[in-house]
Amino acid sequence: MANPEERSANYARQSSRRLALQALYQCQFTQNSVTELVEQYKTDEYWKKADQDYFAEMIKVCLASEEKFDEIIDGASDYKVAQIDPIELASLRIAVYEYCHSLFIPENVIIAEAIRLCKRFGADEGYKFVNAILDNICKTQNRLTILQ
Image (cartoon, rainbow, N blue to C red):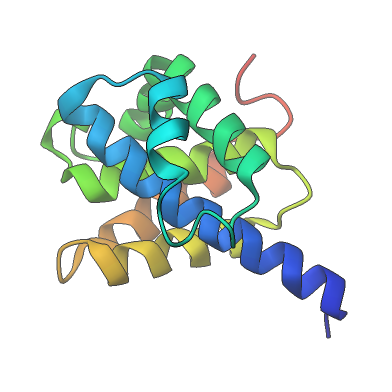
């Protein structure tokens, strides 16, 4: 069982993911910069609960690596990124970020968090699609070399 400090860090990352999902979804339509997004989400009710540095880094890397992340998602899916619902796509990009850049987070936690976000904000059955893609990525891609 996780100690209170670990639980607090896990909850802060959950809040960061929630904010990142909203920010990445928004970016699909507005093309806001990282700076604009961070400033905007400072007023969100989850901001104080979030790991703010983790949120900012996640958004920065997801936006900068969008093309590469989308190639990874395309390679693990029968659908092209353009066909994926924007919420599910944002969730997938967050999960790919964590898979590639947050090696301290176990794969099963990455998948579970992506599913949690999709169940909360996505289409009714979207979480199943996200689960299948992430499972495929984890089975076929080495975390240490995926971005090389």
